[in-house]
Length: 99
Image (cartoon, rainbow, N blue to C red; front, side, top):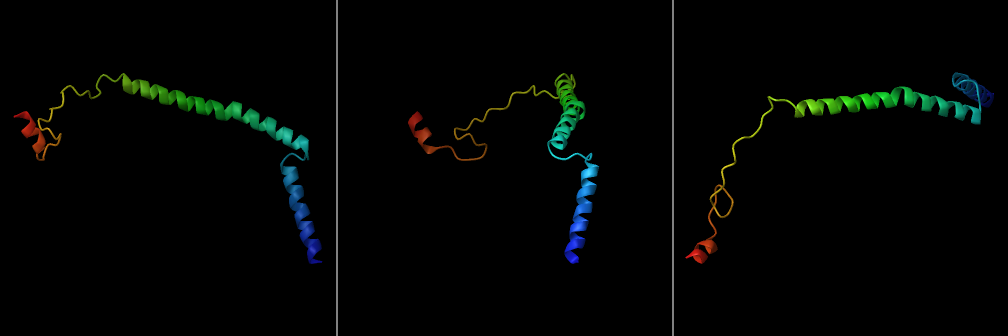
């Protein structure tokens, strides 16, 4: 008796899902979902992605053409030490070879 109730419940769930998906079975169902998915992609997903990409390009172009953006006009001060460090000891080998 318990097994019959389980089969009945499973059958009801399967029937509900089948009806919710359009009532078709087999390859007709797969083909209809493929067509619906393709239409949804080309009507909603792709235009949304393209719009987002165009907005990003416009924002990048606007940022590049901003006349008030910061531009570094000073050249960096060169480091006079041989080691390339601001704080540090000079190499002793270089002092001996110069004299």
